[in-house]
Amino acid sequence: MTELDVLRVFCGSDGAGGNLLGVVRDGVAVPGAAERAALAAELGFSETVFLDDANRGTVDIHTPSVRLPFAGHPLVGMAWLLRSLGCPPRTLRPAAGEVAVRFEGDVVWVYGRAEWVTARTTRRYASAAEVDALPAPPPGEGWLYAWAWQDEAAGVVRARGFPRRGDGIVEDEATGAAALLLTHELGRPLDIRQGTGSRILTRPHPDGTIAIGGQVCPAAP
Image (cartoon, rainbow, N blue to C red; front, side, top):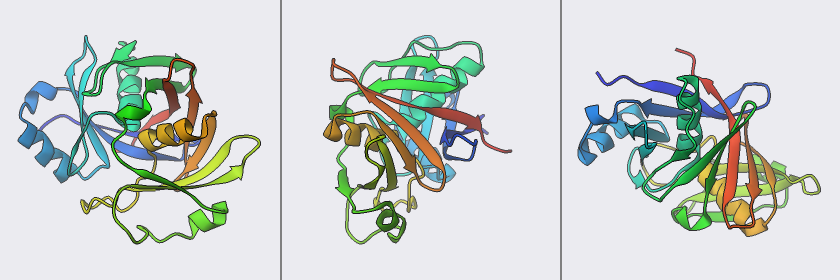
């Protein structure tokens, strides 16, 4: 059996919430694309990440049905885990390219680009209550990031994420890539409250990168 770490990524300030992430530290133990896809589908987390080279920070990210070039919560979780093991990375390398990593107290930041985000739609609603009232998932096809201002002046957003891929993930508890895309569209830092209790922080930078930050907790055994 492949050794697996399970984390909650983008936990709320009270330690609740967070999106479950499966981390396979010994990616070499699951070498083939088909085997990785099968394991990710079996585990059923919104994403599972394989560590292929700890020194270089090379990682491979899978949902239960597709491989992703970039995703926020696997990279934040992997960076946190490597730091907890005494090897804090400065860079991670998913398929999309080099992702800078920074630690700020309990918050782990990774830096991505909007063009790395796979196709998804952001849709603004009139109020946080409207977002909360949406069925899971809403009718339609394709990835939907539903959001509304909770406090526009303070940059606080209420959001929910619906992959709508047909792979068993009805609603994504916290989604760094979607948060990055929304930040790119709005052009300002955001404090996103997603799912049942998750929190994602974002900061756009002049070089076109966008930092996605959050706290990580080990999942209860």
